[in-house]
Structures are given as structure tokens and as C-alpha cells.
Image (cartoon, rainbow, N blue to C red; front, side, top):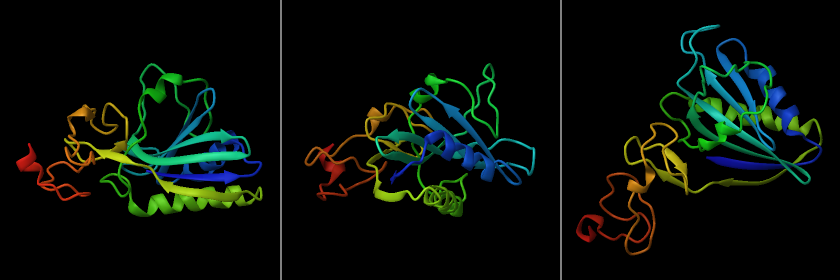
Length: 199
């Protein structure tokens, strides 16, 4: 997961609409969901070409307003589809606060999201925000916890994996330093403790 801040007169809804205009066509598909203070945009590859199957996984962007701009958090998540809720691809929709019960997560370059899609989407965001004279602020990688079942990274504090739903409290932390290691690790990545002996 990665997070960037853009200082300037950029609004979440305007950025979301620009992403929909650019990415909801040809071999890619995009949708947006709104809540009180957030807009979430999902972008993915069409499974079998234009106007065909929706993707299983998508880049998911949470766009939040700041006092002087927006904060964009990008990760990978399942494509959101709810049978009893109408979602309009290519346009913003109404209030869907329950969507945000599912945390953003994922590994860049995951199985279903092409590696180059991430950088191309960031380039789209940079192009749009620079047209408003917005200055890019701090960029940071967010701390994550790897799912013990599938290995997908999830934000620290998440209770369930965003990709497979596995409870994340099953990921043990190092008894020596508290660091959370990837599934199946024999030694702690931070302090080198033999995790098998410690168990």
C-alpha cells in the first residue's frame, strides 16, 4: 500500500471522476463509491475484453479530503460487487458507508493486477492534480501485515484479509521484538530470532 498527499485546490470527487473518465474504457474498468468524507475508486483489467467480465482483483484508491488538498491511498482489493446495490461504472454513486468495513490491502504487482497498472494510475493522478497546481507532499509506504493464508498485505490493525477473509490475528508477532513476519518465516526479519525455537 502507498499513500500520497496533494496540496492544492483538488477535490476528491473531481479526481475520482477524472480517473473514471480515463480508466473506464477499452480493456480496463473503473467504478467509484462515495461515503460522507471519502471517495473510493477501483480500477482493474477486464477479464476477457471490452464489456466483459469484471476483474477479481483491482487497484483500490481511497481519496480523502484534507484541509488543503487530498490524500490518496492505493492498495489492492477484491473488485466490489453487491447484488442488491446498483453500482454505476463510469460515474459516482450515492452513499455506501458499509463498503468501508472492508480494509484496503494488497501487494503491489499481485496475481491479478498488472505491475504497470499501478505506475500508470499514479501518473494519471499526478497529471490531474498538477493541472490544479497541486504540489505533491509526503509519499509513504504504509505498514502492513501479511495474511497467513494467501500472503496478501493488509493494513496493520485489520482484522480480516481483504483478499481471502482469513482472520489476521493468526499472524504471530516476534516474541522478542514484536515485529510481524511473513507467513512461514523461520527467523524474524527484524531481530533474527529463531521463530521455530521460540514457538
